[in-house]
Image (cartoon, rainbow, N blue to C red; front, side, top):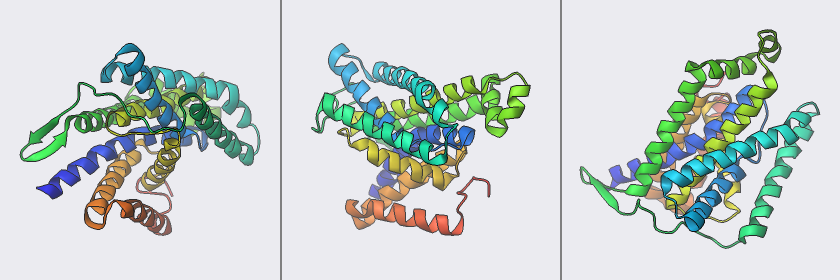
Length: 285
């Protein structure tokens, strides 16, 4: 029964990994652009949740929505003020631009919030549920299920709506999309907004159960790259499957070998996958 509890916990954590990684893979699929500041978007979502709880007394639904809106606006602003300009430059400029943005956001958070580790005050999601003998914290269960639903919703949005079709059209062929009357700049700004919003919601969900500091974005950013590469760059379903698998591997590694070894196992398997299948699970060769 303890093993089942570990598996459930790993899958719930993996669902959150899938949510914030899906935004990163959306940007890559549309623009072949790597956003090194994606982890900092997750970190900012956590601080938005904290501010909403402390200042407004809001609950999980309130600070989840606030994180989504705030990070969506930030994502659109980042695209309009920075990304649309550096995409015309060399690849090195693209890489350094988001790396510099990550440092700017991280050290701004240090300046505003300090380096202290913080956590959310007690929310309405306290307590533990007993589901067929498996003890699951309510906060972790709600966060995992919400993340899984939102990741599936993003996939359905991309594949089943007119706007989603336009986003995919720009990802497939920017010039052909322009000939069809689609404005690529608007679609790419929307993609950056959606990617940042997904990271912000994931951060707010993580904040329910885990303490953090401004440096946590570095950890989440690295994990997002692992998930996206594992699932296949540009594939939202791939990010979803990879997030669940990696969350499960982390949980089982911590259970069998100890928490200190969980990342070693994940990154070791990640390198092995790159050796045998560099395009990832669902990526194109």
